[in-house]
Structures are given as structure tokens and as C-alpha cells.
Image 1 (cartoon, rainbow, N blue to C red):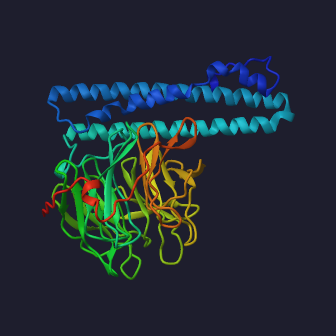
Image 2: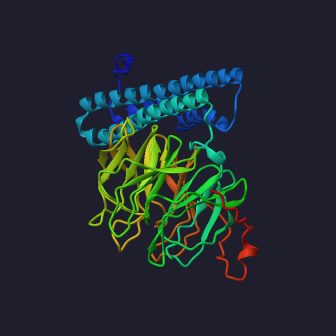
Length: 445
């Protein structure tokens, strides 16, 4: 549809203020866009179900209806933005002295248009992925690992201790109640490990202890409330990054006296490791995220400086390719996908700082933009996206002290706020068992 050709402009408009007033009724409320997201996210509630053929057909029809409704709202918003821009351009030609004011408004509308296009493409891709899962009946992997999609389910958290002498504390954050609940601890001390969380399992990969690099792989199974040992990594590594893609856990990079570019894949159904395609550039303390059905590796430290390249797995899955640039490298940061964009937050850009800044990346346009900063600088933390917001959960401050405050980013208000909670009291050696629920030492291969 050619939106611009359908725009009818009022010839009596004299200035930008009048233009904006004349088009107030054309502006799409942010709540309407949010409602479209809710419609598009609705099918995700069924991601762990098993359907009969007739039930699958019903779900597929609901997905189709949701995609049509989401597309209608997004395209309507896009059309209204085009109308406002066209009217402002006309106003500028009639009254050039207001050109600076008009440019600001046009720039704002362009941002809305870019976001709308990205969100629409993202929504379409997610629906396509869910359709594929429905058709294949593949909603879970081994031990109930759910394919990760933004939703309101509780997320498992591990405190990534900066000291190998501290126990690994784990807990669960529930976005619905906005409460963090301690669960237990993994008693084997280690530091600089990777953490990856699915719906039911929390994986702890590699790390270091007493100067030794580790290939240990263990996970906490929430359903069984059990600590399980998995098959060891093929390669010892500290400071790796990890994320899920196509039913596998990817473990990338790290350090073992040299900075690594190697990649290992853990089959969630088979419980086995295999070597994957290597990165183009070595890196440690990077981030791995899945977006648009593809896996991206961002940032990290390459031994000389913070790595600027963004890498993505190729369509064939046989190699990583350079996809874009960080435009400001950092390490030890949190990363997640929210409404079609990759968000990164916190971490450090050199050995003397800890960041509170937040940025987001659009994989379709390969462009970055600055986002509102968090209230607290933090590193080695969990950045988690739900359907409605982004949460920065726990982590460490500039002095490497535990930061138990949780922050929430509201995309409508463009503002971070502290999630109210009771102060966390770190347990001492004599009250661990009292403070934390016991976990069984159920080791399995």
C-alpha cells in the first residue's frame, strides 16, 4: 500500500504546532501497540503443551489470526506516522523558521517508524518459529528444556561470584510478582563460569578454581530440585559465553592461557557435546543471544581490547560470519532480545569502570541507538526480557560487591525503576541450610 499517496493534507495549516494539533487524533496510543504485542505473544502460553491434530489446527488458526491483528495495528501506526511526517514537511516549506523544531519531530517519527518495522518483522519471525515448533511437536528438549521465548514465566538466576572461594548461589525471579526467591547453592566453588537458563534448568559451564581452568558442566533441575552433573566440555575454558539455538546449548570463546575462538554445542536431548564452527575472532566475557531464529555473539575481550565485531551463525550453520560492529566494545555485560532489538547493558569498557549505560541493536538495519541508563552500574548479571519489560537482575557493582537490587525498564515510560523488595541478607556459614532450601545431590550423566 502506498501510504503517502493516500494522505490528505489540510491547506490551512500555518505552523508546526497547528500541524501536530491537527493530527492529534491520528496518533496511535502506545497502549494500542502494546495490545498488539499481547496479541502476538498470546500463543506463547501454549509452548509446553502437547496437541492432538485437531488442537494443532486450532492453535495454527489462532496464530494466523494473531499475526493478522498485530500486522493491522502496526501498519495503522506506520500510516499515521507517515501522515504526520508529510504534514510537517509541508509546514516546513510554508514556514522555514520552524525547520529546527520540525526536524526534531520528524526525527522522532522516523524512530517510531523504524521501531514499527523492526517489531513487525520480529513478530512475523516469531510466529513462523512457533508454527515450526507446532508442526514438529518440538516444544521441549531433555529434562523439559523449553525453547526460550519472551514470556512472564519465572527465570532461574545464578550469582556469578567474582571469587572462586564463594559458593554459587541460585534463585528464581518471578516477573508476575516481581519477587526474587533464593533456591539453594551449588557447593563446588568456581569463578568466571558461563550461565544459561532455560525454563526448567540452569546450566553452569566451565570457569576456574585455584588457578585451574575447568571443563565441568553441571545444571540445576528445578522440577527435581536436584543438582546434576553433565558430560564434561571437550575443552577447558574460563570466561566463556553461552546461549540456546535450535535445540542446542552453544558455549563460545573464553580463555585457557590464550583467548579462544572455539565453540562447543551441547545437544539438549542427547546430553552430548560436539565441536561447533569457530568464531572469526577470539573473545572472553562476551554475550550470546538468539534473535530472529539466529544466534549472535557480541562483544567480549580479545586479549588486546574489547572486541568490536558482532558475529552470527551462517544460514547453513557451518560457520560464523562477521555481521556488524559494536560501535563501542564492552565485556561482562547483560544481553537480551526485546521487541525485535538486541539490548545490552552494564559490563565494563576497561578495567577501571563498571557501566550503567544501555544500548539496543536492530539486526535488520544493523544500527545501534542509546537507551536510558540503569540506575545502578552492574556487571556479571542477568538481563531478562518479558513480554512487557526488561529486568536487570542482581550482579556486582564496581567494587565487585553483590548487588541484589533488581531494576525494571518500562518501554512506554522509557525509564528504569528499582523493583521493591526486602533487603537480601547474605547467609553465613552457620545458617546456609536454614536460609536456603536444601537441594539433593542427584548426579546423573
